[in-house]
Image 1 (cartoon, one colour):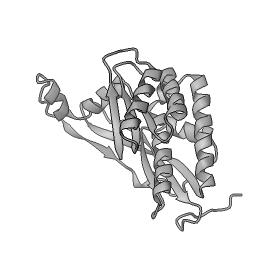
Image 2 (cartoon, helix red, strand yellow; image 1 turned 90 degrees about the vertical axis):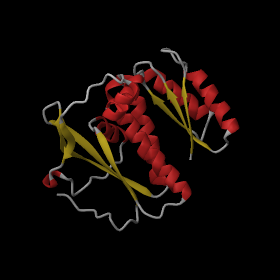
Image 3 (tube, helix red, strand yellow; image 1 turned 60 degrees about the vertical axis):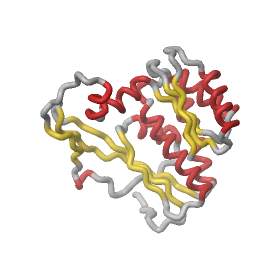
Length: 229
């Protein structure tokens, strides 16, 4: 899969200019699958929406991703070795290793069917991570469809705290369209939260919510529906 990442020295990136570069990149690599706009700007829901809309219109078939400065720093900060590589003065701190703690009793055993984009968006907004699950034996087309859908849900989860109400409505509408496309292709979507906690490091134990996201063929043997009273 060909992925191109672009980073310009500006705190005020232009969605149109970034899409111009995406179109140019696709002319060089016709099989381009993903174009990443990396910027030192703070998270901006409007820029994200404009970039996504123009990518769909002018560069169809290429997934557009925006990586804001907080996202970049967050990725670096999660790896102390990488921090020390770029900031030599970063101290060597003796600390408990960070670990994720799961309670088997809280792992969801029955995952509800999701048919609403708004419902899925709420689940994405309330999560700190995602466990993606999907049917085996996907064709190349199905893999692209399912993979793009799962990535889209994860992207909305990352942007949750920065979306204005209007952007949330558009996000729910976009997810509904993707849900409809997934269902038309013969797949069903199931999702539920699992509460976990993070321990170690310099901070007290803190809660973590992970989304279990299943995209399964309607004929998948793993699906069991139960009647409710």
